[in-house]
Length: 198
Ligand code: ATP
Image 1 (cartoon, helix red, strand yellow):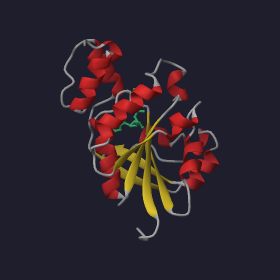
Image 2 (image 1 turned 180 degrees about the vertical axis):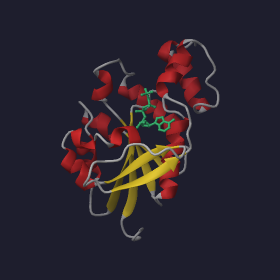
Image 3 (image 1 turned 120 degrees about the horizontal axis):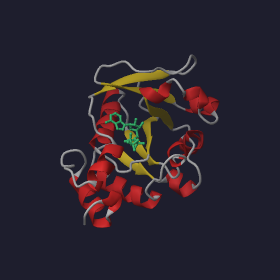
Image 4 (image 1 turned 120 degrees about the vertical axis):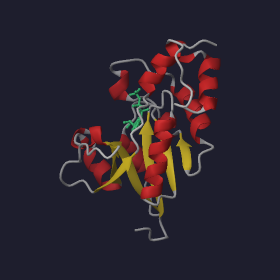
């Protein structure tokens, strides 16, 4: 319950390469469902699980795209703290930086990742610093955290949008309208990202 004293802050980490309407829909649903004051959209500096297998757009560019996508959305705030910290992005470090007596943290994770939370770096810190929020899509129950993880579940509309599909669309000049904010589309094309035409 909202005790009215501590700010309730959602922490939604992502690569946001590029940010899209799926990210916005999730953040807004979580904010509404759990009565959060704000959701921090934390742009990963080095998403080590992804950079191990593929290349990722430079962090400063993804940060700029995220500002374009999220700044005008009520209750969403872009955070560059992982980029300022540098190096590999670990959730335990991020939650440690954000935690304090004045706020209660809610860590947003996809249900695909939930069952593996014990394998995250310094998972005991992650578990103790935030309430985990597991995202189900379109009423389909996905994975759940291991025993001992306090968690909420939020069901979000199933939107079949992914950053990898968008990168492929930009690269092959297929339509992207309606899948991500107009300003992000323009910025991606202006910068020639993902092999898009200028
Ligand atoms: P990629 O396709 O490159 O893996 P992504 O959009 O899945 O990109 P991130 O930018 O890291 O990946 O997304 C942050 C979080 O948002 C992830 O936990 C991911 O599971 C979740 N997410 C992304 N798109 C959707 C969607 N359409 N519906 C629900 N969750 C999503």
